[in-house]
Length: 72
Image (tube, rainbow, N blue to C red; front, side, top):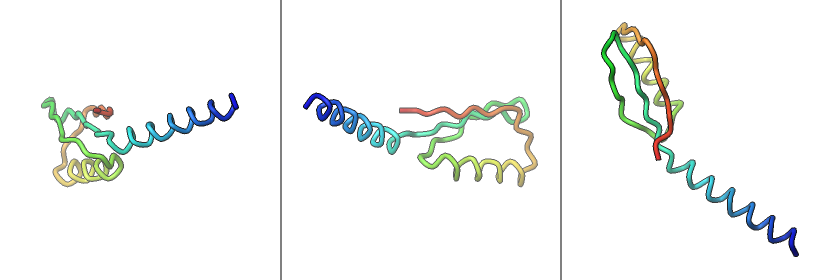
């Protein structure tokens, strides 16, 4: 019975983690040619970074650094 209780708690924890990941909002900070810009957040990190890199390439911008972190 004790094992079952622990398993249920673990299952609930995983379910909460899934919900948290779905609601995760990624914010990208980038510095372009000494000008720091805060780019709006998105739920799909890979697509967003890909579009950011495409924009930087097309505009021939030099991205000095980029920080990606989750915002809840």
